[in-house]
Amino acid sequence: MTDTARDLRSHFGLTTIPFTREIAVEDRWPAPLFDEPLAALRATLEQRMSALLVAPSGTGKTVLLRTLRSCLPEARYRVNYVKLTPLSKRDLCREIGLACGLDINGAYPVLMRKLQDAFCSQADDDGLRPVLMIDESQELRPDVLATLRLLTNFDMDSRLVLSLVLAGDSRLRSLLDRADLEPVRRRMAHFASLRLLSRGETVEYMQHRLRVAGASQFPFDSQAIDAVYEITRGNLRATDHLARKSLELAAQKGAPAIDASLVASARQYLLL
Image (cartoon, rainbow, N blue to C red; front, side):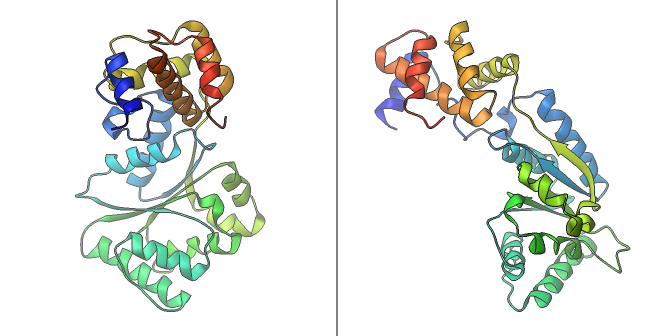
């Protein structure tokens, strides 16, 4: 543990470092703006259909996917997660295969058939519902994204075997609005979205993260909260970075609480 982390914990009486990405699903912030899309996505998968999740960068999309995965019983579902960069059709199939624990090779049509056979085997032989979560889907080329409709086509499109969850930022929504991607768009039975936090939600979120970290008091005064919100505009990731850096500076200076000047100083060390 670094001296900075040790000083921060001891100065504020914390058990863990707050505002990091290392947040367990059970410790996530329970709020309607996350719980409502979560419930809708889960209901869609329970119906063996596919869904779309679009959210601005830094608003908790991947945490929501992790939570969704934890909500699906392992005895009933086989959930596979892929985070993408631009890929060819063949490379996409191989990446999905690796995520599913399959070491598959061959030309694109062969790989597609092997994936379909694997998902059918999970459903028919293992009694599991296959779910494929594809994160950062906005990075897919249109021609590659179009192939996903083939991945969900079983028995001449008469069976619901594989559920897809496509997740990405606003570029994914724009991408799916293309006329040539209408077949993929029409397969999405639900569209969920996340948004930036309000000022009140920002306060509640920060209070929750500090409670989870063991804080007995909330060290940000009202002007500090105003400064955090003005700088981050409700972006969760930016809020995490700025709040943690403000706490670090307060610990270094021996300040008992964080005011607006400390938040302003913390911003100088971040690309916000």
